[in-house]
Image (tube, rainbow, N blue to C red; front, side, top):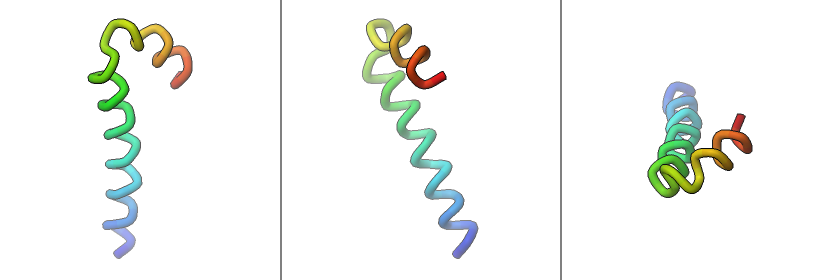
Length: 37
């Protein structure tokens, strides 16, 4: 069950990045990268 929980957390983070990147590839690239980094 530990591996499943870890996978879920990692997947959540990856989805967030992918969603933001795909949602705003140009208009959100500068703001997203600055805010995320």
